[in-house]
Length: 70
Image (cartoon, rainbow, N blue to C red; front, side):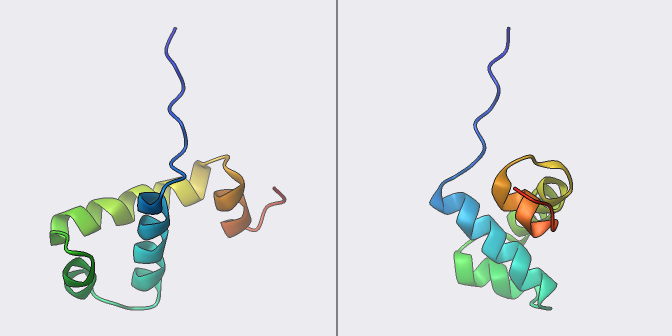
């Protein structure tokens, strides 16, 4: 039986949500990459992952972002 992966509740998870919010506010991938010391391809992967998490993750943080009751 596989263990369920723990939902990311670390500073990295917070950073990833900040990155996604910056993209939503119109900041470029390149400027975010520079600010966080990441490669642009890493920022793009974070954006894809966060978009998916916001759509399906049952964690209360993401449910609240979707406007659902936690």
